[in-house]
Image 1 (cartoon, rainbow, N blue to C red):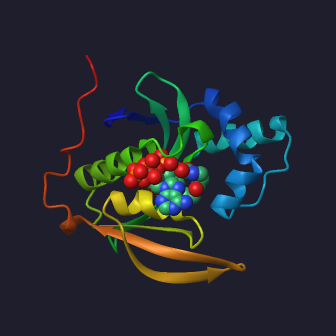
Image 2 (image 1 turned 90 degrees about the vertical axis):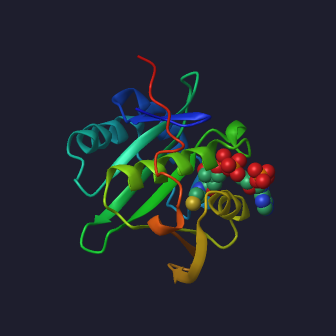
Image 3 (image 1 turned 45 degrees about the vertical axis):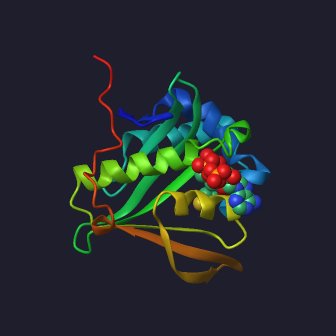
Length: 181
Ligand SMILES: CC(C)(COP(=O)(O)OP(=O)(O)OC[C@H]1O[C@@H](n2cnc3c(N)ncnc32)[C@H](O)[C@@H]1OP(=O)(O)O)[C@@H](O)C(=O)NCCC(=O)NCCS
């Protein structure tokens, strides 16, 4: 469990499946994420979900985002971990629309980046978000990410953003508090 100012990052669990299914079948979220809308039934989804939880590749580290009072509001992940290059890609989704623009996303990203730089030797975290997704870009800028290029893929246009360990002069775990005993 990793505690930020407004959120807690915790391991994913089977009980998250109904929320995650709701978010994966939400057309607005799929649009903002440039992701295909899930068409599987919940039972089909649950079967894949169960095996993915069990057989997570070592290059992927995923977390649920809970509010401090324990409400599951989204997920974040770092994946494509490349130890040779010292980098990984970050992804985040606040699935609960009522929780947008309240600082949860920025706190989750800041907390995850601090965790990565504190607990691993990775030197660079990168991400992509749609050119049109101004909210996401603002959120990532607040966390210290800077744009470094553009990508057009499958008719979508993305801005590429990155953050380097050396940009973060302060102790990497400054934003972390210890979980209550
Ligand atoms: C993108 C996302 C992670 C951001 O998390 P969040 O909790 O909403 O973001 P924050 O509140 O930390 O920051 C959002 C900032 O964008 C601002 N903002 C909102 N809409 C905006 C717009 N249209 N243009 C510019 N800024 C905007 C907010 O005012 C806020 O800035 P402020 O703190 O200075 O007021 C979250 O909204 C989300 O998951 N959205 C749905 C899915 C999605 O966009 N996926 C793509 C992720 S790459």
